[in-house]
Structure formats: structure tokens, C-alpha cells
Image (cartoon, rainbow, N blue to C red; front, side):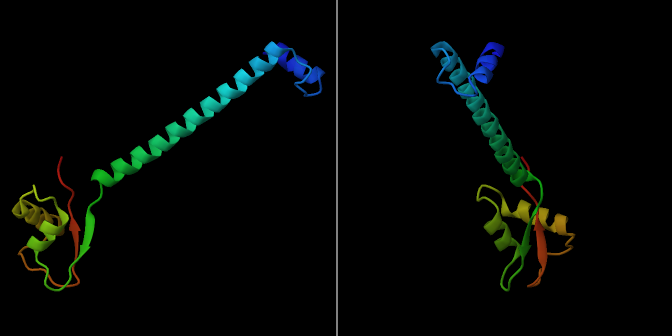
Length: 117
């Protein structure tokens, strides 16, 4: 590569006077840098997307504002998959929010615990 740089300086930055194999070699280095840049950007984007997906998958609990007519059962059925037992989800909601009974009032803000597993 040093001889390519020297020839590049001698010709004043013009590649028209360089021998053909040096032009090909120079193109090879340019394309290699481009491929490395694309690979680097793809890696960064993948890391960002993976971090965002794993952060939304399990960490912080969701919030729910209780509206008139809602019960713990209706909240559990609405926010959790049908494969989960609503009774277990209700107990999780009660434990997370420190509820002693099953009564909730409109305007209450409940934390909905994430599913285990």
C-alpha cells in the first residue's frame, strides 16, 4: 500500500496516470472499507434492536389505570395471555401492589407484574 500512496502523491491525487493494477488495488481497499463500514453499522443496529427487545421483554412492570366497571379478573384477562390462569395473575397483581382484598377503585394505578419465564 505504501507504493500506491507514493504514486498517488506523485500524480497530484489523480488516478488516471496510475498503472491499472494500482487502480484495481485502490478500488479493492475502498470497497473493503465500505464493506467494513456496512458490517459495523449492521452490528450496531443489531445490538440496539436486541437491547430494545430484551428491555421490553421482561424488566419493568406495566402500569394500568383502573376505569369504572373493571375488576382484577378483567384486568388479568385483558393484559395476560389466555394460556395463563387469571387467578394466578390476580394474585401477582395483588402482591405487587400490596392489596389486601380484591376491591379496586376507579382511578387506582396498578403495576402489572411481568410473566415469569
